[in-house]
Image (tube, rainbow, N blue to C red; front, side, top):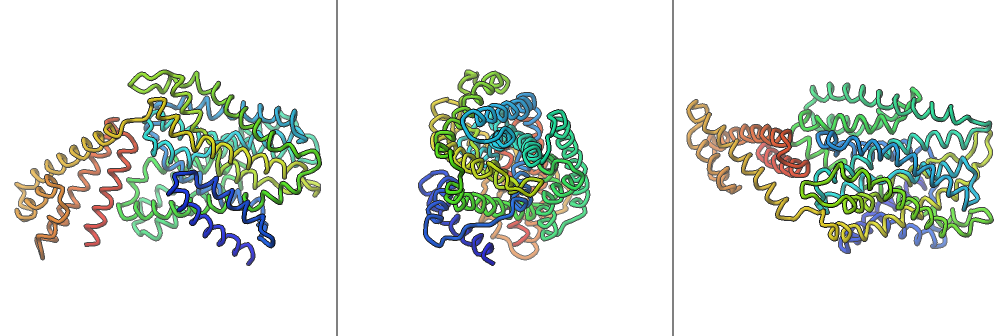
Length: 513
């Protein structure tokens, strides 16, 4: 009961903090961590007692799945080479560098230092996606930072699982075994994710109930995670693969009302889970600092050193990759590298992974170094969220990389005009068939040409019903045209999602009316 009360308190706190942060345009997660710390300093404040397994099972799957569904598979094909190099090479290099640094400057053992490196090798796909869209990054740059963040999460969390297995093992574990385990975990997870996605897609094709669709969408990431873990594969990789595959065909598997409902439900789920994780780490931080062993008093300087090494290594790794995603405007590679590097903030994924570190070793003894790993992870996450989060907008502006507002507006207007022309062409084909009353056809033409919503209210009775049916048919044609524009690379994924959302709202309003 105490745990339930703590979670409810965190949700209320997160709502208040998010409202405050949005008004001031500051990163809400960092403020929430600081608010949790302040609450924890109050005498008698609750200290959350969350089992580590609960974090990895409850929090990670839906957060990863939501980010994976947002990824444009079409755009991913254009940047898969640099994404692969970053998601594999940079993660392994970051984990090794931070592990070596931690051994040199902290009292952590080599296995726990490598656990710290694996935890901090991942960036935050939720924050990266939101920042990229808000700052209007070019399509190839946006998909690079989004895909790299998502897949490096999968890689680093698989690496984290191997590192934890080494750290908690009572006996020695060979690195050859660890490398083989890494390959089997990642490959098995990918297979499980693809098979589950195919099964879910088959089920959703025969489901039209909004409640069942919502339940399926919420259960899918957990099913992928649990199934993969049950066959000793990577649940994280399974979730990412399932999300990417289903996200590609999601608009074909559900109607407008279901898409709107799923979007709203997942927005709430992501907000709640992120809020709970950041709140928990804030409440736990004072206790973790107090419980640090002797000789750990320099953890703020150690965290600063780790953050600097992470950023420097990312710069060196990203710069050679930037030429592959250079926008048509021909901006220099170092400008792209700067933006991609600064967009790689750490967030909820490292925190959730750190919280999931086991409390004891295989022989039942307490796991040494766990409190320090949590403290260093939290400090690095807060540093990157605050420093990079506050300054990313200025970095993008100075780089000249951001798309002008006129560019985005022009692309959307051109796409809307193409959809309206497709709708008018469909009405012209129907005019000679006498399927609908001429008045309904004229009303639909007027609605497309003037875009006046109140035009539909002029008809009543049979004419109004015919108009609604006719407008729904036109929206179906416009949906097809929208997908054609997207498949032919004439519009960006952001524009497609914006127009899809508008069409879904209009179709839902017609059905409800």
